[in-house]
Each structure stands twice: as C-alpha cells, then as structure tokens.
Image (cartoon, rainbow, N blue to C red; front, side, top):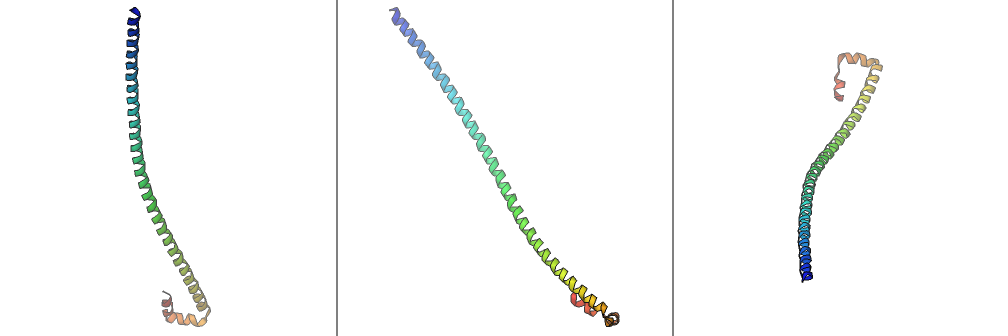
Length: 120
C-alpha cells in the first residue's frame, strides 16, 4: 500500500513539475514572441525612415543632375559667345591695324567714324 501511495506521490510531483515546466516554457515563448514583434516593429520603422531618406536623396540627386545639365548648357553657350567675341576682337584689331597703317585713314577718321558702327 505504501508503494502505491509513493507511486501516486511521485506521479503527482512529476505532474506538478511538468505543469510548472510547461508554464515556464509558455512564459518564455510569449516573451520571445513579444521581443520578435518589437524587433519587427523597429525594423519596419527603420525601413520606413530609410525609404523616406532615400526618396529625399533621389529627389536631391535629380535636382542636382538637372542643375548640372543647365550649367553645362550655360558653359557651352558662354564658350561659344567667348569664341565669337574673340573672333570679332581679332577682326577689329586687324581692321584697326590696317586703318592706322593707312595715312588716308587718319585724315578720314577725323571727319567720320561711321565705319565703326558696322561691327556693333
């Protein structure tokens, strides 16, 4: 009879330990799931923030690219204008040199400067 009581006692203790062990496991699992959910939420927020930052950066890069293209176009126009002005300056210099070398120019120059207007 004692052995049956002991057996029931041992079985009862084992059941209690199993219940406690199962409760502890459920608690740990619940805690772990909560940590995973919090981690997912942090990653989601981080991803959202990074996507917004990426969108702003892409927008800035597009603006910079447009500005760079506009500056290249402006530079091209200015170089073209500079070359044209250098050519005009060269022609005017040659014209003035040829006129100052001509003695008739000096007497004509004192009368009229109309010939200069055609360059401007």
